[in-house]
Length: 402
Ligand code: NDP
Image 1 (cartoon, rainbow, N blue to C red):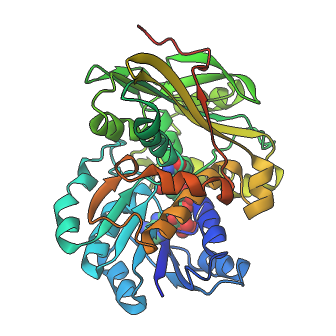
Image 2 (image 1 turned 135 degrees about the vertical axis):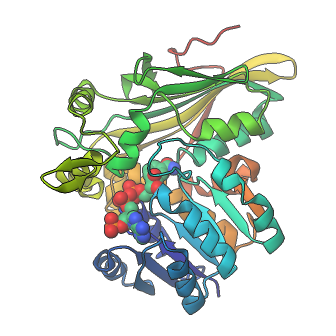
């Protein structure tokens, strides 16, 4: 029977494990390897119905991962650590002859640039080795890519405009917290906003473009244009897209804190000297603020993530809005998680199922939209992530030019 190895024991990994642990028929043995061994042990104890083997691992060192792969002989590695580990883990999988899945594109620690070029460069080696790598299968990226692939397959002859919209309307009761790893999250949103228009990447100052959006079941929230990695792969794989943008909602309270942190230099990613020690301000800030997983018990309210598309079907212009709405409380009831970790952690568990079943096995390195979206989308509702399609009733906020 196939064995899988999960790397990382944080907020997202907890959800993926919660789902994998319920399928001993598919995953009779799960190796859980991460930097802090005690977290692996705690998680293994939390799911006693599954056979989870905890292991300490510094995944920055390829040879350490290869040693573990040789010891346990999994067929698949799920990288739920941080984007910094992507390349080292892809290397290790090649050496160990193991398929690979992650949820976020590689970024160099010293430059917050989200580009797939580092991981796309593995295409030939994975193909030659007969191994499959699936990049970015969380919710966004991940399910959002599958929504676009579904739209291209079932709803449109050509897609021209794409807006991806991520709304967290929940309340965790803390003055400020991020919903997944703070360092990764703040590196992303403090960058200039970027979007694709007619083949060009257009840059605007950080958080300088925003619109009010009326979300189903939620009401109006302010959404800010930011860059997100799936835009790069989606415009490449669907070249008919003329404009692709990504929006994320933030509350005024969130932005007030964020701007203060930025102004004080606390989101800096370079080292500063402090009393003879080298300190990276964003890492220090992360130590001070709540662990995203700890928000789960008190989190209440909706999360809504979707894609709005406009294009042509049978010569007629149409729009489609494809989205998932869930509540943080539902995520807690199912997996003792908050909604963001849940939306990110469920899809890799389904991807693991599709890989071990051979359904998504395809040697090479792939973004999610390059795979058949139907098997993923068919399984999402049963796994706790229902989704809907609304045709020709677009969200009322986005100005889409003729
Ligand atoms: P956390 O910080 O909660 O967890 C990360 C885990 O990785 C921790 O257990 C950490 O160990 C471990 N880790 C870090 N460095 C190493 C290393 N060198 N070797 C081994 N283990 C290491 O992050 P999240 O769970 O919030 O996020 C996990 C991933 O999911 C991130 O890449 C994030 O970008 C991605 N994500 C994707 C989303 C999507 O929709 N596509 C949405 C949200 C997140 P330690 O416990 O010691 O710190």
